[in-house]
Amino acid sequence: MQLRLGSPLLTAAFSLCAATAMAAPRVATDFSNMRSGPGARWPVIAQIPAGAKIRLDNCGPGWKHDWCQIRYKGKRGFVAANTLEPTMKNVIVAPLVTRDATAVRSGPGESWKVVAKIPAGRKVVSSGCQKGWMTNWCKVAYEGKSGYVDRNYLKRKGAVFAR
Image (cartoon, rainbow, N blue to C red; front, side, top):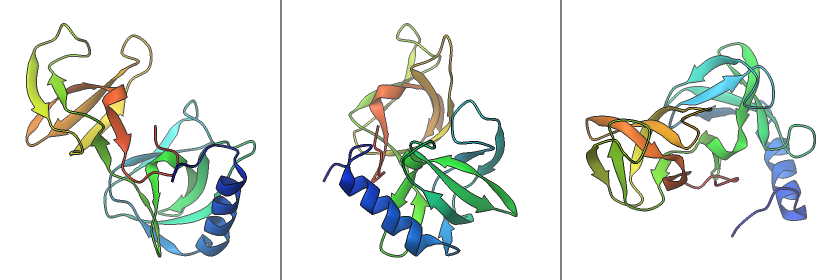
């Protein structure tokens, strides 16, 4: 089932998620940046590593768009909703996987040497996707190799707002 931003079903899902999630511990499964405000332009105040316990305070549409307010190690901040995966009991940071088979390159662009190939659906660890001249490239690690992957070949597995 696909959920779209602003749909009644999505609003209901976030309302239910927020209502049942208040003060319940959550677990991160892949790193996510916690920001001081609801958007990518806000400063990163913490990186949430895999396995970290977090608390979900609020998640929903409106002025925050697709950002969720959380608590982590005594700090309050926001994470992108597309990094969260709903489960039966928890909301977790969803793992980053490849959409299709893709090449890992030594630099951020098609002209850089291919250092590895990743099959579709495989989990990767990303240290971030850059803005500016590297807009479409993310630094990733896969099976001991690191390099750059076109952002369009990546998605959050099971994410509410899959990209």
